[in-house]
Each structure stands twice: as structure tokens, then as C-alpha cells.
Image 1 (tube, helix red, strand yellow):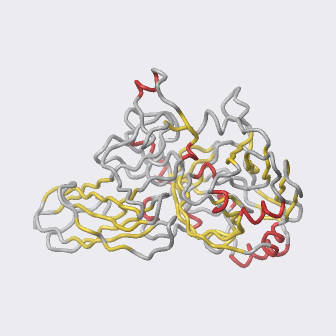
Image 2: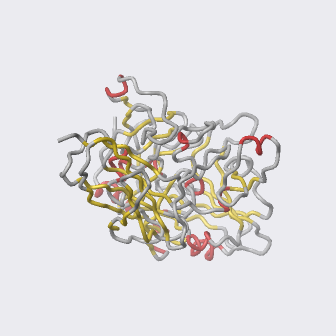
Length: 424
């Protein structure tokens, strides 16, 4: 059964050092799951917007689309992207290992800094809140494999639609402030992060703990936030309670959930989740071909070497209902980039032959979703293909060509949506 906790109850648990207990994380499948769904989600021009799994309910979540249950992978439905901020209860979920916490006792939980620090630390949640200056940032959390179902040829992994992403206001403390207190000593080469999820990973790979690391001189460590609030409320358990890493502009594989250990390493981290997992071709757009990969011609680097590419998605219209000639329709969605704030979104209603600028919503920061909208009054009946492309402050423009790599990462091809205009 889902848990229903008020914001006051959740904040009271934090203030009082109590335990947040969630019901066991097995799902209740909705009646919609009994309806057969198509098994085909690609290729372009009109794949299904979301993946094709059943709708399920989990603690603190509205019905989301299930890809897998061990580890849990839940996708956010299309309608929740009409606004720049994604509701906590609709935020997607992605775990790599099957054993995840259902409860955290805040009276005993500590964020532990260990390894090559001058002053190893153990910090309670209350200490994080009271002893460090709070900061709030709007930032997109996107799974590296978001939209993997679009890849042709297909690649292994969760066949996400477009819903393995979300945008929230994250409140917490600067990672750099915490590291400064601990005192990173000379000889440190990487900073490693670990949460509370564990369990069997790929066999024979030593992958039973999910560990991610950054070189000690990586600029992202100065931007990173240890977040304890999500949209002004404690994080849902499935999104990393009590604290998680926020790495603005970077893919979610580095946003460690249930963060409990930060380590200063004196040797490079070579665990499975750093290499060979989450590697991309060292090419300008992270793309290659199956033939080049098979021939051993492709140099691979961690996906942390790049920021999320610019992209936009169409939320409305969704093609489920016809439009009428002479009746205005609003084309809307969100755009984002890990390389700079969104400065322009163009919309086409003739499959990219001509473009017109959309109206942009509020600027919530360089790493946030930005809403766009354009009112279109169709005049001619028949099928029309809507397309949307985004441009960021760095001059990066969303491409009209797909990407291919073995991990199914970095998809940002221009999306299209067919709509039918009736004959009046």
C-alpha cells in the first residue's frame, strides 16, 4: 500500500531524528496492466512517447510505468512534463541493484567521509541542515539511457521512452563546503560516492555495490550539491532519502541516491560501474557504428566526460485526438541542456520544412527544464507532422540525426509528433 505522509509529518521526522519507514517496495499493478500493449516502440518517425510497460503504484508515487521491478525502474508518463517542475510523486525511478532501503533511521544514520581526509567526518542530517549554508538549484536529472528504445539497431538495457528524466528544485549543501571541512589531503586522486543500495549486479564483475567517482580536480565537484529537500520536501525514499548527490548538467548515474559514504581515494576507481559500465565513444557526439565497435576501432571514455546534450520533447498535442481546422491548438513541452540554458525553441508543423520561434517560459536556471509553447491554428485537413528543436546558450542546436553507441546513451534527436486535422 502506498504511504501518504504530509509535508509536516516528513519535516517532523527530520527535525526529530526519527525513522522514515516505507512500505515494502513491491508494486500494486493497476487494471491497465491487463490491457495488452504493443511490443514495438521504434523506429522513427513516431515511436511511442513512453515505454510500453504496465502502470504500477509504489510507496509515495502516483502510477508510473514499470520497466523492471528488480532492480526498480519506473518511467514518468508524458503528461507530467507540461510544467518545468516535475512533481516528486511522479519523478522517475532508476536503480541498478535489487536491494534498496525501505527505511532509514535518522537517529543512527550518518554521512561518513573517510579515506585520505585530514579530518574524517560523520555528519547527521541535522548537522548538514544547521552547520552548512543551504543552497537551492533547479536541475534536470536524466538517466543516461533515456529514450534508448529509439536506437536502431537496438541495444541491450532498459527500453526507456522519453520519461526517464525529471526536473526539481534541489535544496542542500555544497559538496565543496563539506569536503573543505574534512580537508582533502595531498595524494588524493578521486572522490568516491556510495549509497545504501546493493545486491547482485552483473555476475563476476564485483558489481554488488554502486560506486561512482570523479577526479579530484573535476569542476563539477564545485557545483555539486548534497540535497536533502526536493521541491521543498524531503526526498521520496525511491529518489534517495535522506540525501542524494545533485550533479548539475551531468547524467543521473552520478547522482548517488541514499548517499552515505564519501571517500578520498589515493588510487583510481576501477570498479565495474566506472569501467566498463557507462562508457561512451570518444567522438564529438558520442556516436559510432556497430561495425567500428566490433572492429575495435572505438576509444571509450566515462560518460562523465560530457554534459547532457541539448534536447526538447513534445508533450501536447499527443496525437490521441484529432484537431479541428480553424480551432487554435497549443503545442507545448520542455527543453533543456547540460551545456547552457535554453535560449530558443523552434517549432515546425510541416515536418521540419519551415520553423517558427516558440514562446519560452520562465528561466529557472541554466540546468533546468524550460517550458515552451506555440499556438497553432491548423487550416488544412489531413496529417501534419510537428517537430521541435532547441538551442542553448552555448550555440548547441538539437540535431535531426540519431546517435548510436552500445550503451544506448545520449539520445537527443529532434522529436516528431503526427496529428490528424479533420475535414470540416
